[in-house]
Length: 397
Image 1 (cartoon, rainbow, N blue to C red):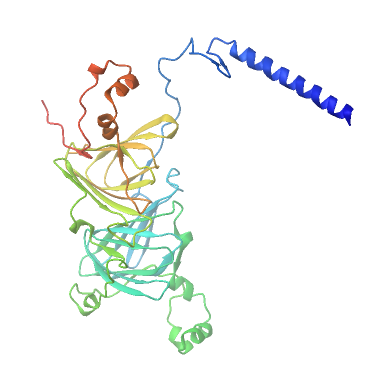
Image 2 (cartoon, rainbow, N blue to C red; image 1 turned 180 degrees about the vertical axis):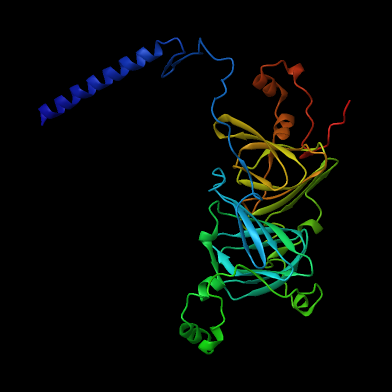
């Protein structure tokens, strides 16, 4: 026993001596001492850290040039992480329904959010507690369906209806959508007869595959079907009239409408936004600490500058029909650069809305700290303007 302890002691001393020699060797270098309390400034240093080379970050794509899925009553296009790999947590879609068209009852593995761009529709929802809602929507309205809530959308009136959709799953697609016609068409009619208490003949005319968006009769905007709507109370409704509300931000440069779970209680996983920028205006540099952003350009042209992870910067110009994905905490700004005002609709994948701005830091941090950060005399630090969120267009000199 004594001999074993003696060998262990000698091995420990040898290991410790080797470690000490390594430490002393490191501390003897010219880049500053680093051995316990023996530390010092570096004698050789970089004035600035070089920018990293490499391919630029791809964070935009065209939603409206993607594959189309069209049936008798309308069509849809989608953009997922398969087409835009950076978009890991949010997918987007564009839905168009003819007058008289109806997207059949279905549900998803993800929550669904939508903004009505034009036209009118009636939404029917039945939740897992058997609570039903039938509600009418028009331009500027939102819908939100939690995952697993069965829902359908039907056009009202003589004009088509189209909407921009978002889902809180970057891989959302048909793989996670369950539709009534696809499901029921696979059952033997005797099983359906037993399940619903009617004769098997009642199911003889059911389509033998998915109908998706079905063409039907046009429903009048003020007809009996439209008047049959039964909207739930504010806490439980799946509809929110976003553009009928006062904007969160309104400046000479434009406006920002926000619908988080605070304003739209049903929308627990996605916050909706509509940003309108006057020609030449800008949504100033900012970031979202706890949410990814996905947005789609409805009108105008925009320039998005992204300060991404791994110190990468990318700049992209977007036209109507194109979309961008901004990962959480990545700094970004949006400028209106076209000949007309810009309009952007999108979501953050959080029920709360937080926005940190570069202007807050530049106006609230001590000037001596900023002078140190930039290596400038304090007198050279400008009097930065306070947060405006949306900067007005620059007037030519």
